[in-house]
Structures are given as structure tokens and as C-alpha cells.
Image 1 (spheres, rainbow, N blue to C red):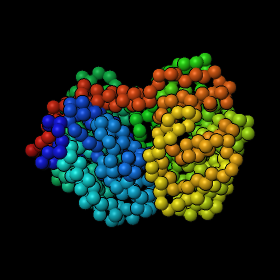
Image 2: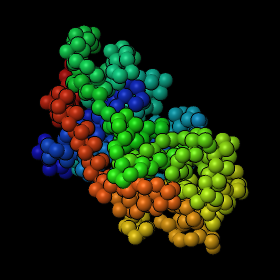
Image 3: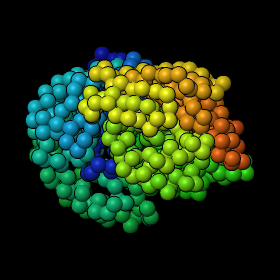
Image 4: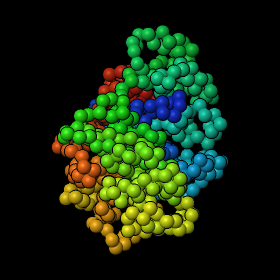
Length: 503
């Protein structure tokens, strides 16, 4: 690979599959992208189909999974809709919004999607991959779930279905920290058809703790049973779950939770409680808060857990009306209102901002009609069929702010706000905005935390030199180091350059 990209033929490629969901596919893909980028290779990430409530808006206004945006950052390229042509955003246990090439095209049940729509998208997916391969030296593809989900193989467009269509070699990642990794590797391979098995070129062990020499006999036995080598044993590393797809794992919060909280710059710490609302989306918004020395972030679902919080965050959600009902049922709505009356800080982001308003008119997301909000901000929200996807830039608290917007709700600001706030507003110690990612702007985050600390009566002082961008780069470099130091990089290069090995 000469690192120039855009040659006459297609660039190389590799599919990173996993024995299970959360085996480490996203971080391994990002690590390979960073390793190749450091070698001067023009590389791009790709995930044919992603199911996630954590999404991002590209500069051209397309919505893609945040994991692919993170992987693009690892590759040092601008994220594009080509990198995640199909995004599924769950709205319930049985249905999801389908986002195609960055734009929503409707809601489908799981049965409806797998019964025909998914298979029909294979052509779109392979065209996007082919375009990336035409303009890059290498494309590192991430699978989804497990390739051995044999009940879904016929309509698969993200695992072996994609690998077959694009003739991609496959490396299977297994999480040894869960136990049973040898059985998972063997069982995954054995369940595949013979044609699919031919594409599986090797295995990567992830999250290993201890002496790797104790593992080597098992790796040799695995090779004897399957005919395939293990291409690396990656050690367990804390705090590398950056931009997770779903769940309550937050990247830098994870690092704080797994290690000693960095000491505060001032005399006090600051406690942040994030309401764990149903269908929570873009919970990565609070990563930048957790990156601050002395800021402790936790997710809560009971009113008593708000008692000692200096800041309460109502995050984004794919079900604003449902989340609002959840807050009321849990007693959290009353606790938040009590905080506001006492002048204690509350921040609502996107769906959380909408819940803080006076009224919500929703005939789109929940189809619940008119619903009363918490009444803490002079805002009325009407859900529109068209989704707002934007990358706004503005100013708040005297600092420049960048963010991104992903919402159907259109906010009408009424009289009564103390001041505007990132296209939202503030009343007393209650702030609301549709902007995701705003807290990643370092100057604004520090100014906001100073206001929170003052309202909470805390002697907390933000550290003057915390750079969220630099911290993210350090994490991505650590992922690249894991691949470079613990994987068989020569073998990976051969697979990427030469494709599926003979035999």
C-alpha cells in the first residue's frame, strides 16, 4: 500500500466480525484504522448496517452511527454517509426508524425489515463499499452481532453476506474476559456454511488478562481444529469503550468508573446525575463532563439519587413522551421540578430539552397528541415529519460552541426566558438546548461548569488545560498501539492487500 488512494483498481479490505455483540468489533476496527493511518495508508471505516441510538451528523447533513464517526476520526478522514449506509434507530422492542444514506425513510418492524427490506438494500450497501474502495487504499468493515446468527443469514448484508458479495477476508474477534472464547471461535466457524467458512481467515482474542504463554496451547489446538491462526491477543485495557453503540456505557465515564477519579483542580468535586431515560440517545454528550478532573458522572433512575447531585442532566431520547411518562412514574419529574424551584442546576439536551417545556404536540414519534411537559422552560414543541439534521456553530456564555442536531421536535420559544442558550433558553438554573456535542467545546464546557458550581455552592474550579479533543486522540492512539504491539500486523496487511487466502 502506497498510501495515495484513488488508484485505478479497488482498494484493499477486511471485515472484522465478532463472536457476539460487544466482543470488541468497534474498537478493533478503530484500532486497525488508526494503525494503518499512522503508516500513511488512506483508510476508511465501513459498517453496512448499524443499530444504535447514538448517532452523529456529517458535514453534509447525513446521520450515521457515532461508532463510525469515531472510526473515521481514528482513520483521520471526514465521516461520510457512505461509511454507514443503513442505520436502524429503535423506537420500541419491535420497530426501528430506518435511516438510509443519512436520511430517515420510515419506520419498520423487525419482521418487516428482515422479511424483505434488508435483502433489497444489499445493492446499496455494496455500492457504498465499492465507492469507498475506489477512493481509499483500504476499507476496514465492521460486522454486527455475530456472523453465526443462522436464522438471519439469508437476508444478511452486514456480516458474511457482505463479505461474500465483496470478497472480503474475515477476522473474528472474541472477548476472552467473558469466558468460553475457544468454544465461541469454534462454534461460530462451525455454524457457517462451507462457502462462508472459506472467507474466515483467522481470529483475534480481545481483553486478555494475564500471561499470554498460558493461552498458547489453546491457540494451537484451535488452529488444529479449524485450520485457522489466531492473529493476535489484545490485552485488557481500561477506558477504551469510546462512542459505544448502545447501553449505559459512556466512553470517558467508563474510564473514570474503572479507575480513580482524577482529583479536582479546586477544593471541591462536582457531582452530575444523568437520568437513565428509556430509549436514551447520544448519552456520549456527557463524556466531556466525565473527562473533567473532579467531575463525577453517574446514571440514575430514582429521585433520591438526585439529592446530592450538583447538576442533573435530562439527555436525548428516541421517545420523548415515553421518557416524560417514565420521569413522572419514577418520581423523578417531581424531584427535577423541586430542584428548579430551589435554584439548583438542570440541563436538558434534545429530548431532555423538549421535556422541560410547557407542552409537546406529537403526532409523529409517539402519536400521543398533546402532552403537558414539565413546565420549567417557556417552550412549546411540535413534532414534524421532517427530521432536523444540522451542524450548528454559535456562542454561549461568551465562548464559541460547535454541536450537532438530530430531532423531529421543533421548539417554539415563548416569552419568559432569562436568556437564549444555543437555540434554546435558560430560566434561572434550568438550561435547555437541542444541540448535542456542545460540551466537547472546551471553553464553553469550563464556563458552563463554573456557572453550575456557583449555583450549587461548590468550590469547584474547572481545570484550565483539559482538552477533550486531545483526550479522544490519546484514546484512539492507544487503540492503534494495541493493534501494532499485539496483533500480527504482517498477516493483517496481507489479508487487506491480497484478499481471502487460498485454502
